[in-house]
Length: 181
Image 1 (cartoon, rainbow, N blue to C red):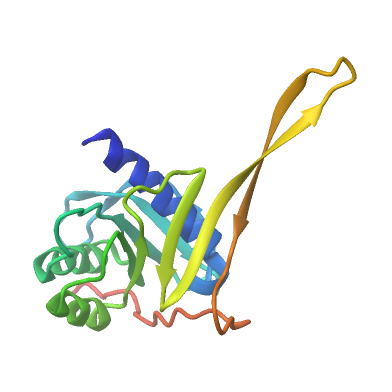
Image 2 (cartoon, rainbow, N blue to C red; image 1 turned 180 degrees about the vertical axis):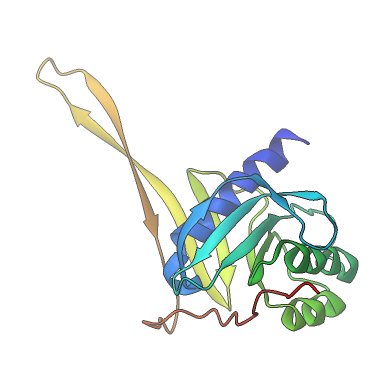
């Protein structure tokens, strides 16, 4: 995996964590292997977001496609992982909109989509979720010390700017865990 893809996965988890109120999640965990209930295999996922209502978790997958939009087949593969690991749904992060067929598969399988600019970093990102724009940034403040030297103090903060802000979460993931017979 490229360094850019690794950074993008980390940024994807940060964006999900920063938007947790919008996404109705209480916490976000990092990359991990999850057991498939149907396939008896393990799946490496980019992250897990736990629902705030206690009704399971959402799989997080980051796809840093810079030359094309995410295709239907990729979303279908993620949809299968969701079913196999027993997740309530998923969150896919990519730099561009989904292809038309991918949007249909995502909707049918409780997969939310967040657009995050491919050039994003932990210090600075641009994201779009449901037509609302979000900016994550770090402030660099210069502090004058008594001996007139300057030191840098980095304060991390998340700035959320969007039109038509709503007080409730926007995610409506309602999948029940699959039953295995």
